[in-house]
Image (cartoon, rainbow, N blue to C red; front, side):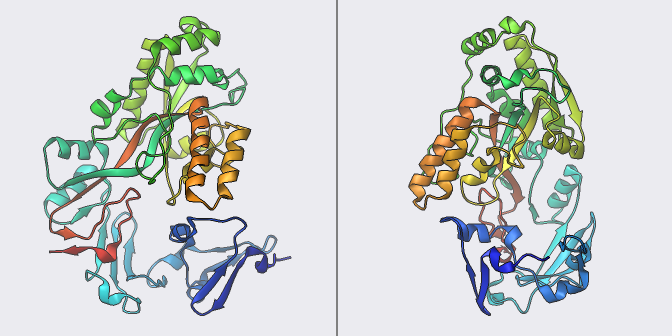
Length: 403
């Protein structure tokens, strides 16, 4: 039996109006509708690619619907060609409602997986914009004083995640189930050398989870700072004086991107030097790494989070009890209560205060160890206009022109 679509709370009033009924007030709902997963698609053009499961009535679509010439869009461009690992071409859409204000005659997207190849193409004027530089290339361009490297605040945070369950996946007692151990590990790392000597692209260190300065009016909660005396006292209190009897654990990271390994080596060295705890390093490829985190098959691991929409809840919702993205398996009833209250609060200032209190609980209990905020790293020359750098790194192609 198919579910009744009327239960969804969405109805078309006429050809140009949509009514959405929400359970709770949602001050950021217009921004949410601009999030990619809410984009409309053309039902008639997709009909030929429709696949329906006879048992569950679940509808999916063969991916060919999104390839040229099948893809129908309502945006400023039409997809005219696409080749895997080569690139794509976008031509102006004559049916676009605002076609008169599209600032360019089309866009060619070039794929070059090697960072140095990307830079060579840029320096040879084969491409005009490098949309996301690697840390190493950005750091080198920055050290050379190049004017075509642009580094701006981002919408993400780099951190370490602790598994908070009582037992590790192999059945052994988990030392990070004790909040005192997590706090001690957090307070025994000097973070400045990470951004100064490893990432080197101007990333700001942070003790908080939500990126600093992105949400107007949002106060920054007080995270745990470097405090070796207190860290050692907490380890002793937890039953591990000077690291004695601490179990063998692994620090897991994905091998893609040289900075993850370098940061892990530095952090492991800090824990050995400051807490007398030896941590083994474990590098795995990205797919296995993601599965390990999702399945809670780790003890401490590198992690990160980028926001999806312009509201603090895009960060705080990650650590709700039982959440699909809550890799740490951390749970706190008061945190859940504050986030639920914020969901129902229409006043933005009051919502921010509730989420501020929630983030403070998260930072006190340390299911994650924030290290630094990401930055957006783009390369483009002065003749490129209309990019409008922003924390979410949303590039509106129709606004870009080349003088």
